[in-house]
Image (cartoon, rainbow, N blue to C red; front, side, top):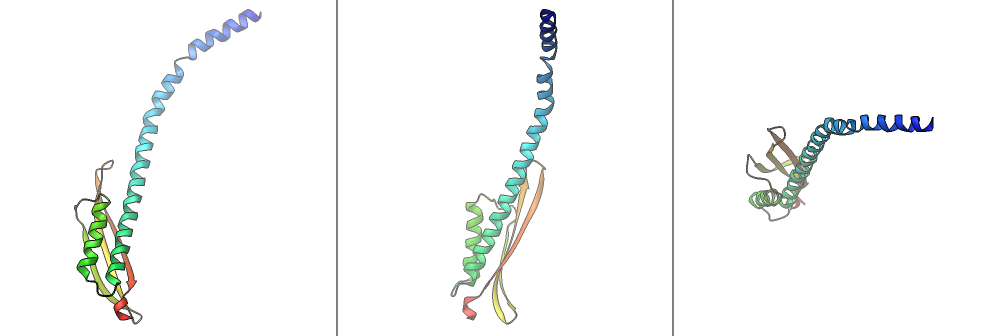
Length: 136
């Protein structure tokens, strides 16, 4: 009796042997797609943080006493180029505005980015302001 049971178990195992391969071949493309999608989203978040940091740096330099808008623009462009951005539609504006009686140096950066997975262009926009030191 034991011999018959063990024989049936072996026969069943041999029939199920290919089902794992079939299951993996059905799930593997979905896992690969999910991995590529997650990498694209992480890349977009990283680029967004880079644009925000470039904007903050430009505003900080624009707010420094004796600096010019060109030096702040150059700093933002240098930061973006070092981070791997190409010039596919970059806008860097530096201006001053008065808020509640305080003069602020404002940096506004727009950078377009092509997302290869979606085949679309995304526009990243960031604005940062710092208290202008020349007004202190």
